[in-house]
Length: 398
Image (cartoon, rainbow, N blue to C red; front, side, top):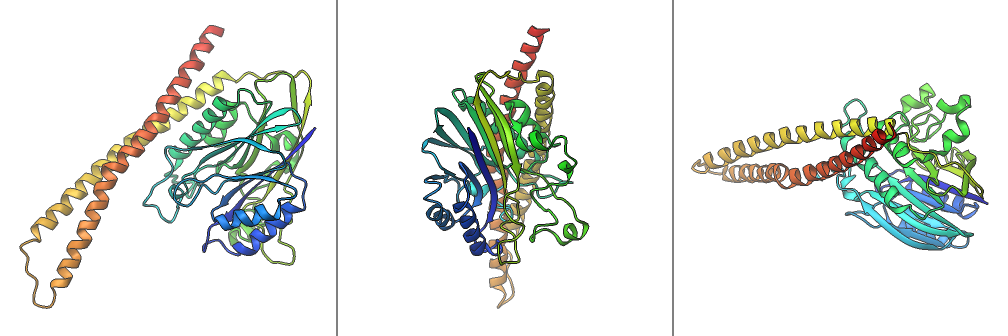
């Protein structure tokens, strides 16, 4: 049978995202008139937007689930033509910073959502994820967080896919094919990138992006003028690594939506939607073994990045404590100070600001430091367990 998956980062941030109401109406209309088996959406931050789509597609995609998490919700939801038998959401331990309000990744409580389907006798696991964004490629302060999330994703898929005939991972992974996070997910799970399965021999491979593409109305003006194809960071991956009696192939891959919303001058989102049609058939297929040398190299690189992040955290903590002590000394030394008449309010206001800043630095150097340190350390220790397993198996084979 054919199994058709649709994925889109909808860019649905209330107030901030441009043309949000009109775009979500257009997205719901497009989904209601299409024959998808499963739809995975990300950045559906407003519950009203989820309900809008749910009501619009109820005849074609009767079953749905929204994964609530964090302060504003994970933004991840799944719509299905087939009954959803089970769901689970795994929130990542490290997920950005609470004080980076302009980035807001932490407030979403990001993670990976899992839905189990039974489709014509096939057990199908649907995973949808949205990894931490990369805000500055040259100075990426979130690289370790994204690497940890990618490893966590790979582990979660491995631990929950034992009885699955088909595994599908769809979403905005915020990582390009040459990046470490991408390599972690692909090599440690054995999943295939549906785009590469169709486009690997095509000259179009470097001309198709899913974000910041020149043909998107929300792309940077520089990208539009230069005709830059943008970055490919949205994926539909699949695999059936544990069932040799099932054969899966990519029948079709495309970006299904028009470049502009009909009768409008803007795109459906700042990302491009993607769809893949997978052909599922019963028949003997070879189970591809994981490349242990590649997996070993990837995990060693992950551990190195984690160690660097842990050292940087210790340095930051030292800085936080130094600044906290300095502010405390300033606060204490200013206690006997008497301001001229009429200026007492300025002194009190200054002391209040110093106290608030001191409290913030104390929080970052104590509670927040411990949470982030333990989160990264836990991921690193899990990586070391996996690394030892691959090394042991390699030695046995040797």
